[in-house]
Image (cartoon, rainbow, N blue to C red):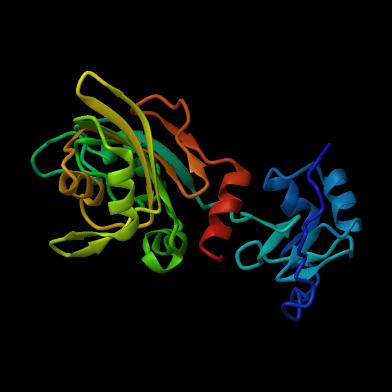
Length: 268
């Protein structure tokens, strides 16, 4: 049983709607939804009848409509559904000391070591952005080139959240003001979207930063500039995707809702 609420915006007139395929081509819409893990075929038929399913921007109520899974844009309750079987979306909790590369000429441990079996099986994976060797946490791996490009492009302003343990007890008001107004770095000014002081103890502070900047070592450089060098840095979120309690060095496959929200974040 699917308990999702009806979408607020169905965009029924956004395009001309799904292209009619010749008999025998494509797959029935309810089968596509079932394969994507949305619901059983019977439940998918009920969702179609209720007007909760869009194909290429138009609400579909026709049972048995055949769609092209390679190209059709399918949404349920306004959230995009990934229907292409070959697309892979993984979250890695990158351990400290590991390189954000698929191979390393110096023999250092790298992300490619963790996904070696998948690559050997023919999956072509690449990481979305990088974390420097000393930074831990969430790294997205995918073979969806367009999504990866948009997630890294600053124009889409996808936020990234970091937890940082820093030297010194942070003066929250002063540091928050500087981050809000912008900090001048050697490659230009940078701002933090949101800054939170979590705790201070024994000459150290734990802070949270949210920003959509993607420049190299941006978080470390910002904290250095305000007088609080980083001791430990962990990325906990990339847009709507959270690391949660995932153990270092482990992979997990993104859930359908997470993938749909990522597509929404980059306007796909």
